[in-house]
Length: 408
Image (cartoon, rainbow, N blue to C red; front, side, top):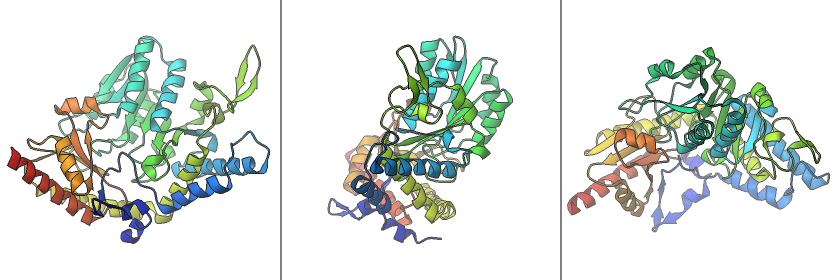
């Protein structure tokens, strides 16, 4: 296995001292830090190749276009998609889902139709469908979760009717880290000719994704969750679906011909990439994927599992703590609360100890309502986290409990 301590050296921000000491970054589900090779690639692009893509015939534009399309091919291979035409660059997961909600909704959702999501979705994979249903007079149905936060998958067949037009769900919960049985859900959906969208924002950085093996119809993720720049995302769509969908954003670069009376659109993926794309972000995403490929997911998964298992063991030794989603099929994060201590208060104290976590609803308020809580503390891990980070996290939690219990 690769030397993970050596990999930590690849991330310049981890060398920074805050409050005069090294810090522990455990907010990776929100955004990951960037390795030097990605930062170098961004700087190199802006200092040597920066030019708008697709519409210029001069050298820099052609070079930038080649770099952009090379990034598209890198993503295609990363997801094992059939063709680059199935890879659309967006501004992130949220943007990708909204594009499908707008385009698919316009074409295929009518009054009385139904869309199914789950009770653990991020707002980005809940609100667009909720708003679409309100506009169209359709119904939003929810696969419930049990007391552990696991999907009650047996309810799916009860929810599906002849009016069901789409199922959209997360691969990995951004709150609980639970891996959903997406293959099973896709098979069930397809047996009723229902397409499936998978939100992979919390998956792609932790394990390999094969969209052909998943057989999903749409797959989305964000670059900043996988060590790339912010403002870049991916929408994968099966070619047969992308051919059926009309664009919902309009502007330059996505047309074949524009006349006063009518406009004809380019083929996918360009018809979904109106305006100036984040071409530098695409280049950064290619660099990030290549960085992951050079390490290898087998080593990444083995290391992350070791750190995660170590964290679970250490948390079991803690007192007066509630862990949510306490099941075996988890990765990437632990969500918890400390008895009689508000998550926000805990995080403020943890910050001063140099341990950075996330608190709040994590944009998953329906899930918080299910658990009857206002929010959690979330510690989320990446390939550069080590066992020592876990030890410091546990020490910080004990420090919070000592301080707050004394005040109580």
